[in-house]
Amino acid sequence: MARPKGFEPLTPRFVVWCSIQLSYGRAVGGQIEGLAGQRNPVAQPFSTSYSKTMRTSLILPLLAMLAGCSGATANAPSLLPRPIESRSDAVAVHPIPAPEPDPALDAKIAVLSNQVDKAVADFDEAAPQVKQSVEAASGAETGSERWIAAQAALSRLDGLRTGILSPLVDLEDLAIARAQSGKPPYPALETAISNAEAADAKQAERLQAIEALAPGYSSPG
Picture (tube, rainbow, N blue to C red):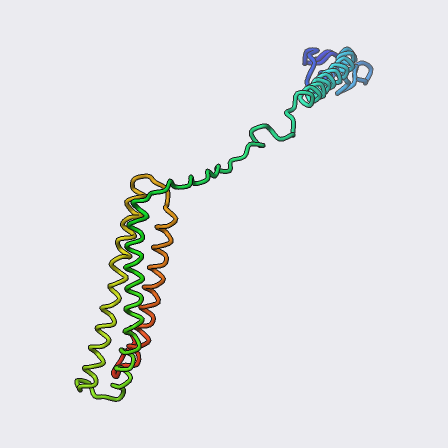
């Protein structure tokens, strides 16, 4: 027969730190000594000690965490802008130095500019006469004398445009050579190039308007 202390030893267990005693006892006078499933009174002090230990083990880590948070706050980096964030990354703009006077270049610019002016004058003088020839050929058949005269007049006027193109190319060559030598732009040279380009564009527009009057004319577009 099993004794009142049961089969299991008095070993503490997790959570309640007590052992479940399976005591069946001895039958005495129709009654069984001991109570089945009775908690071992010897294990009760372990339960009280465990509760205190658990409370202590929970409180201490919590206090440590709070202390750590406090220390981390004290050592936290500032949210103010850092010096590197106040630095400007804008590219510095350096003024272009003024070019030194170049008498030799000024002389070349003057010669080429005079050529442009003469080409403009020659074109302007010939344009009205060419326009009259083209208007006189209005309605003429292709290959007729009036048609041939109008085409010849247009060819002469178109040839006069080369009077501007040649000095314009020379002016641009001077600008390219100056840039390749590392010198800054020369204002007088830039102005001469702009004037020649404007005169050439004006002549091209005027020639196209006269060509549109010729019989059998078809637009380039």
